[in-house]
Image: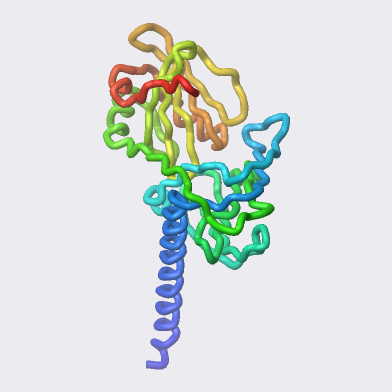
Length: 266
């Protein structure tokens, strides 16, 4: 019996750790669900370092929208929580999202302990470099109603994309969730890929794109002649290039059935 006690202790610790991790993911999902209906307002400092821009920091009255998808997030990320510094004077809990596989960016979110909505977030590249951060500096005294955008499910899009781009290897954890036709002047189709929080743009276009960090492209054969396939997002260049390495042709006909019409106000 004495020999079994250390083993039993380890099992209990493992069980407690698993329960805590599950609870963290569930609590974060609850906060993200509430944030679809309610949001904090006030003064927010937003800094974006990827993609690079001339003026990386601006102010806003609310956190920028991030298309979180809790089911995908739970599948692709390990969620942990810890006590955190106050944000704009309000007590908060920090949730860290670490990819379970692949080289996707990792995220941290600060959730208001009373309101249970986000007060800050940051995105970091796989090497730890800060890609963007948004945090409240001042917060109004009450929550405000949030617009409730409907996220497309992308149901059935995966099979169509596989047929349209033979040889495509989606980066670990990413699935297609939406497609839209690009403006007539640009031409082509844009498919949105998501792992629950990070987003990549997979674009089929009549012209190539200028090379840059976070951009890979390949020339392929299409029904109407030469086409180009781009993959754009916050992943290492090697991962982006690997995804397109075996793509040689494209059949856009099937993708067109999923492509939402162009918004003339964009």
